[in-house]
Image 1 (cartoon, rainbow, N blue to C red):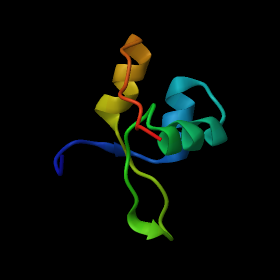
Image 2: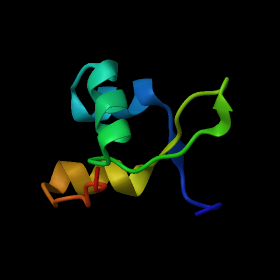
Image 3: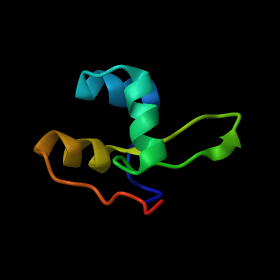
Length: 65
């Protein structure tokens, strides 16, 4: 995962043509996988492969509540 390109919320939103808040909701609910490298201070980073998966229409694993 270290060598994989990472995207910000804004970059992922632009590629998926959705609002950045939609990306944040998807991250919180597990539709899109990402992580926060510096906690809340830096924000989310999303692997480019995750965005490609969503573009292909492949389902993601949703976290159990």
